[in-house]
Length: 239
Image (cartoon, rainbow, N blue to C red; front, side, top):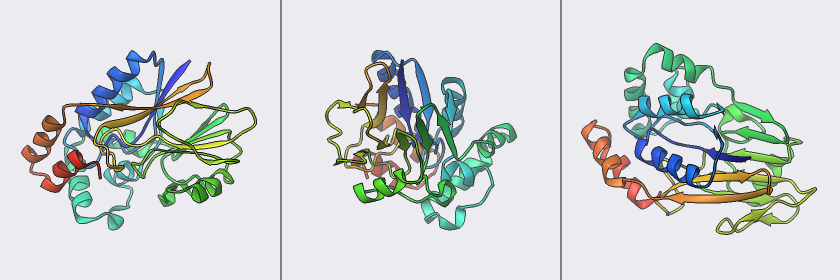
């Protein structure tokens, strides 16, 4: 089976739909989401509807938590806070209830899925380096730990360190891995294209996929909604 792992959609419908098409072209049969469906972008309801329809499961991100009214806004910068409040005002009670009910992590088979640092999923810590990845792996017996939150794709093997994400990654028997799926809706690694991950469970490989999407339409929606222009500008810059 081919499983798509995606994270940090951030209400960017154009990016999400492009990822869906790219996944289908690669034979993806199952989808999971590592959280932050909402925040920053202008299409929270449409993205939520697709996540609820497409995903086998979704875990909670910090923006999901804040929009659901469960706290966390005090840690947001002014732009993120403004969008969280804007989003919460537009969601229906059932949509906020769905976000509030998302688990902080999900274990399935030999994999753990979590938005932030697995040591304390609700503390919203980042995994940004090989050292942090190894420490995170110590928090779980899982062979594969999938994370998001930083918006920066990363793959690290416990025994050999960082791996080249430009290449197909062949998983080795007995090795353990932490993998950051990057961001669908707001990458921050200098590449504006939507990023997600395909795990070919039959071949035991990981592939990072980048997808072009209608960037200008996503930007125009942010501006038309009266959200901070910076949020539209940064989409094109990948930061």
